[in-house]
Image (cartoon, rainbow, N blue to C red; front, side):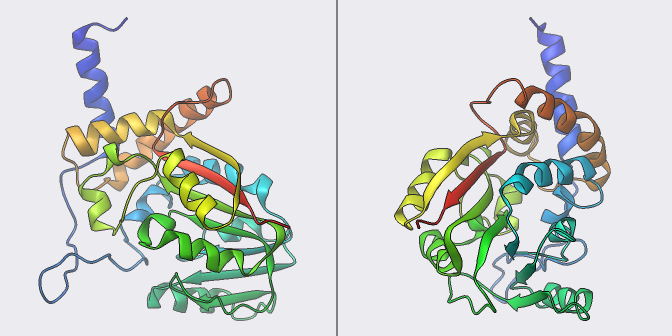
Length: 270
């Protein structure tokens, strides 16, 4: 058992690791309403999986890679850092974003590669793609889309029968805070709410679970209790080196009841 002093110390450490009350300038619409920043360099969400969080990026890859086949459509590719990890194992790759800067950077990145298609795509919408794929990956995208069911239906329409849609979303509205609002999150999911959207869209959930248990505790301490509005990249490095490896070790042994993220692999019916 931890003493009260130890508990306070642990909570304080978690807060320091994850968050900072120093907030970046956030663009606003003409009426003062906050809008999501561009997804290019310096975007808020990039700091959770960018160069400051190499262990977290590997965590993402190791969770997703076993479910990826030979053809992949990635939704919300940003600058392409996640999908580039699959280079060499795919016959066909389609990357997409709805941010002009990101789409431009993706086109530069893959300008000489005929095996990669770049899409300017904002869901829900009909997906105009060169060929159907056996796998769709959405990393921290679905939570931005109000009509998530229609978005999943649109993706199922370009996925081969029996193919998979891999979904990685922030978990639990108890963790919803200022950061979520700034980056345009409509919601945070539980396994139950994500399953409801997946099934309503006609997909079959095969894997559905919360992950990153310690990250969820740290997020709650920093964002909900500590009032942090922005994850400081310098401190994210420390978080990445300590909390993520410990979380992975725990999750190899037990299935957590709660987590910062909800992970789902949904099958398109044959």
